[in-house]
Amino acid sequence: MSHSGAPLLSLLKPQWSAPSSIGAFVTTRLGGVSAPPYDSLNLGAHVGDLPENVNANRDLLNQFLPAQPLWLDQIHSGCVSTPANRLSQADAIVTKEPGQVLAIMTADCLPVLFTSSKGTVIGAAHAGWRGLCAGVLENTVLAMRELIEDSNDQILAWLGPAIGPKAFEVGSDVVECFKQSSIALPQEAFIPIPNRSGKYLANIYLLARNRLESVGLSQISGGDFCTVSQKDQFFSYRRDGITGRFASLIWIK
Image (tube, rainbow, N blue to C red; front, side, top):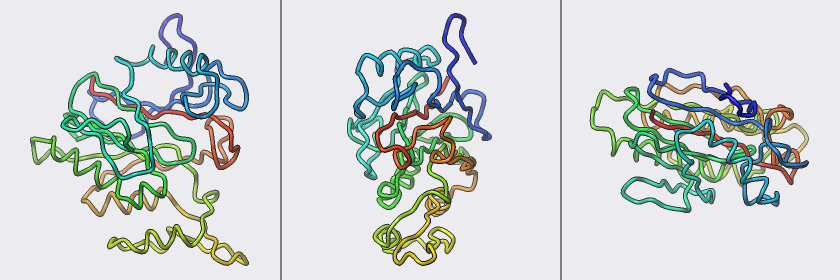
């Protein structure tokens, strides 16, 4: 996927049943200009990388997009930026405007892309454990349903690259946060780590599916990555501490 004269960015396309009118991809860490530990396609302006390198990387990205992305200041909340209430600080965004590019930046947290089955409304969400617990995915689905005019237009979700279930160690505080929800928790969502009291391996993909199913979604794809173990492809905060951010993007053509 390269335009003439454009550098070869390594872009992942979601494997899902979205209509052909939907454009979407995830960047990897490959194809940019940033030096280690941000090597090389770091898109995050808040992580200590040189601003000129971040801007150059975003310029490279823009060559593959119909417009500049609507970047969010992500705050690990359940807040959704909607056409009626555009927020600069939010962890999800929805639109029905063709050509508007929605973007989520991550480096272990879960990016989720959404489209209605007819391609009339799209969304994107940033779901770390705090956002998941705060209902960011359910809120995104509800915000999309506000914009969908045809009741037969079902919502599809794709779970992008995040920290995998073998790498996501959490404490009992995280487990308690989810247990306080009215939504029943799958037993496999938190596996106790032997001989380590109060420590668990969390499955962020299962937690996300659980929340999406609670608001009636059945077409949920993805969830096959691990940002921590797939070091050559993805930035990982848990693995490296100081690192870059990759983006998950979606638009209506």
